[in-house]
Length: 328
Image (cartoon, rainbow, N blue to C red):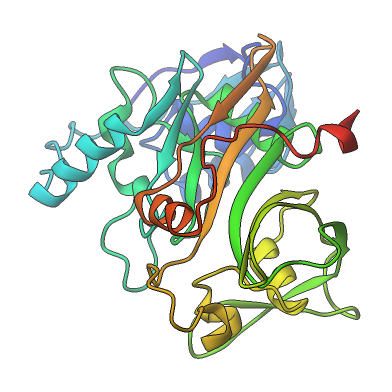
């Protein structure tokens, strides 16, 4: 057992729940044990009782009662051969890295987190990227079948800052897609509320003006292949689940390969194209969590999308931002 001690909330530890701060400092203490310490007043902040949900501020002083010793260090988890290959591939996919963040080009078909029937995912191998520091943390998500820029926070302070930024317009995410058919007009704003629904095939989202959440997408057609398909850039103004896919499918221009929301209408008859989702998180621009200007990362297209760009004769080296006019 430890002795009574006092700790000061650090400058990078403010604006988070007390229980999260405490469990990070003392991982051997379970949530139930912490709740008992709080309920009996043994843990105090600036001499006062607090609740688990109380948000701490830098400079506050925390009284820590005697705590159980940390358990013996567990044996390192054995990494499977499959995970070794995944770790190697993800290291090659790093687009940007500093002391606060890592940006990778997530492959299509790889889940970000685990779930029912998902044995391998990015979150499951992040221990390999700790490099003597904290385990990197996910701060946003991409669908399993969507490729492109995925940002990881390397510290708890960076994770909190980035999580807040992703909830605002300060984080700009640009996507590239191939749509079946050509959107009309070629530039527009989609404002359709979305609601999550259940279903036998997993979570689905649908347009729902009554119960849905506000969702806005800006889009711009870059090139077309007659009237069969279009290369479209999209800029989501909100971050709803499957937002881009549902918006485009609802208006009759589904993302190529998106059978979940458009069935057979998501495929072009007679075209020898990969039967995969053609949605790519092309570029992310976000303020650096330490105030060092902006992070601006661009991800090359995934292999199956390169084949489709070449099939239609699209210039995949075009890095212009079609939203410059809108932003200026």
